[in-house]
Image (tube, rainbow, N blue to C red; front, side, top):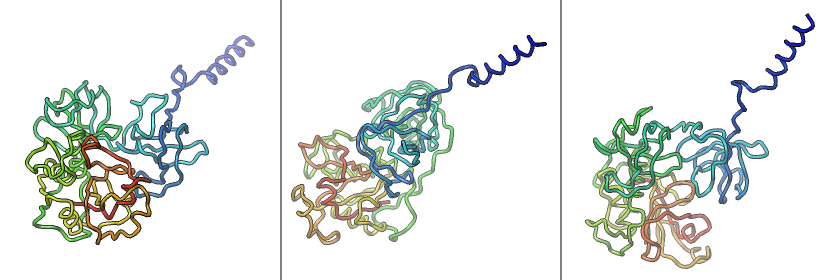
Amino acid sequence: MRRITLLLSGMLLMAAIAPAGGSAAAKPESVSIVAPVNFRTAPSTSSSVMRHLKPGETLTLLEKTNSYWYKVKDASGQIGYVSSQEKYVRLVGGDASAVTARGSNAVIVSGVAFRKSPSTSGALIRYLKKNENVTVTSKVNAYWYAVTDANGVSGYVSSSAKYIKLTGSIAAPSTPSTPSTPSAPGGAAPSSSQVEAVIAAGMKYLGTPYEFGSDRNDTSTFDCSDFVRQAFKDALGITLPADSRGQGSYVRSKSQVTTDWKQLKRGDLMFFMDYKGTSPSNYASKSPFGTRISHVGIYLGDGQILHTYSQKSEGVRIDSIAGKHWEYRFLFGGSAL
């Protein structure tokens, strides 16, 4: 009887020590901060900033909210949201494939090329791997999907079932308005699929050389307004006015604009005045709706702008706004949809 009691006690002790499933518990995945970034109360650039996260900080990853945001917990136990862009954060430990993107609606079933344009000759961004979650923002045609990966990078992938499987529905874009029939300010918000389609169309031109007064019928070079115009034309068939001032007037007729860039939404157009130096005081006399517009770009969220502005800047590119002359030159912004 004593032998049976000791045996049972040993079995109970082993059960208490051994993790469920007979293997060690998976280490929680963490997020390491690699560049200063906002720690927000909600997954939106318009949400409140709790504090600024610093390089070297490590946070616990709770979930991948969507293609652009992580829900995380800091060392003090505070829970919030941070951009998932690789320029700001890096995943550490755990199993990245086990973190499901709540906003994703497709999964890669076999390795496939992720391209900058919907063509087999389109520049390769990278190869998407089996079991990656992506968000299909639109079906370009019978052969290609416009998608956004878990890091927020937009591009195109074959729609063949042997490469990708839809796990949710693709939001149907609403019928776009044309410049000749602008809607009233404050109208219905543009669909996310429209916004993502425009951004994806713009991203495929990254690195395209700058040329002032570029030919509006040639995509080999762009100036700022030509680039924005082409992105909308490619994505939605919308032909915006040809220059930045005309586009500014168009946006003001389409939506409620803001003079605070931090209130902008992803996909909004941003309008700027001439460059007058790097000091905020050089722009103290600007009038948001009276100063001449000289530049336009597409807001990506989290303080990033997609645009082109000079030959030396290497053409179409992405820049940060905060604390730079872009912030001081900003006049107003809003949706063109």
